[in-house]
Length: 363
Image (cartoon, rainbow, N blue to C red; front, top):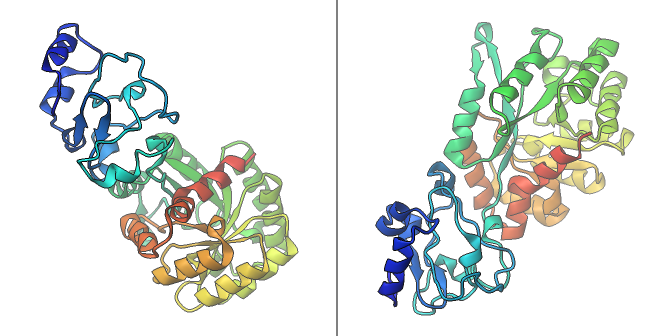
């Protein structure tokens, strides 16, 4: 840390200002070590990888209106506190002699709080089925989210309620309650159960706070455009909740099969999970071009270039990041999106902003 006025620093320390002395003097955190303060500006010279901030409990906050004058014009203060940062003391100027990654951040009226994309994993699983070799714990989902710097995950079972596990909805609701703010719920339901299936979905969306419907035609052998399936999709749409399909290479799950449901339910938002799998990705992009209510989700689809192509052809608002974790790696799946080479705005939408809009719209 450098100061032009060391007497002023001593005066601030003597009066016990509201920044913790340990954090502002020892500069133990890498971010704090990169903060240089001079008489007219506070410069964030070289931000550490932003994923480290939340793990260390350090948040970076800068006023959106960076052009405002400091509240105390006569005192320049170091803004590094392990619990908070005093936003009012940050000016937009940067020290021209010290170039770094922050060179592009502290310009105009940029709000640094919004510089890091909020990542939401739109497809994860929680279930406990030892007989089938599956034990997917909520805690493991959250651990994998933390590992990848992901704010929130959307979880669902790997079996269809009420078949196999009549308490599937309760299992997911309990998982979300155990990690408030970190997990959101989709209800995976078997369409062939008719009125019972509809009642389960209504309860999930209306009573338990679930945010969407998951359909997996491989396990239910229910066609995406079958009457029972369409009935569930329409119930979800009435709550402004999306329907996520497993979309891959198996019969009944191809993009063309699911496109028939999109055509029959134009009021519904339908997500093609895995955006066509390994061999039907081009088909998934093509049908999404034809039907505007189809979104593509990136999990377990191995081609970063196809994410870029989907964004270019459909727009970034219609592509969602997901991992299919915790069995698949959320960290690896995030890197796949970054390898697509999207511009920052598009990457922000794909990694989390699109999913956040979907979740917030459910009623």
